[in-house]
Image (tube, rainbow, N blue to C red):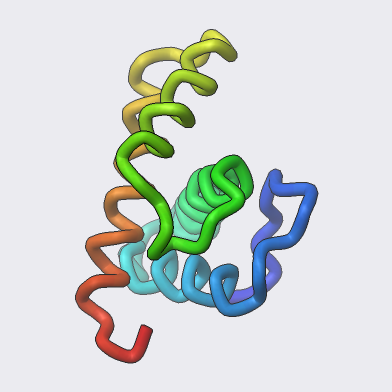
Length: 102
């Protein structure tokens, strides 16, 4: 998968962006009619999170997730949207922990 457009203005380190793209590809059903849209949404959420924290994945703490949640809620996003974004970050971490090469 290539050319995913994200909402992040400041680019993430290329290795992290590559990992996010690989995760989105690996966790999205190849037969989904909305595959590209789902991958884009996944990448946007996780990229937004890391742009918010400004930290490498290994340095992120639970407080960072709570702070991002508070920021999302302050933007008056629906609870379901906040939950979906945080779930995508959780999914990214679960996937990353299962891939020894990372």
